[in-house]
Length: 159
Image (tube, rainbow, N blue to C red):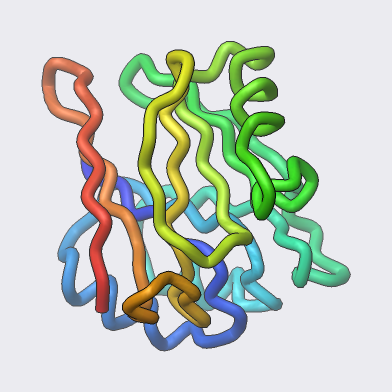
């Protein structure tokens, strides 16, 4: 199973087209917020399930602020992250994932890609397609692949 994870497009949605060309066919698309009204465009670009959450810049959006998914035996908590103060620490996010019995917590907001495991929870941030803030300032996204043995593999990618 191949899942594309993106965040913080901030209306720079055409970068998504470049990502989709680069990654090929996907089984699901996760967007972790700051979509800024481009929900329908995102859904129109793929023919797979899409899971979107609301970010701090998604004013007047009907998107949920959080979601929980189950994929291949993994419980995944989705949030933009601003309610959990992820710009300062991921401790609250990790604790929330544990409380929800999730082994993966995905978030955006910081515009910096990250994948790390802590206390049984894998914390995943794809960075930003629209306005990256990490050192190389390249738009980033994550490919999450779940193999037949239900092992999860993450790859941070750049445009």
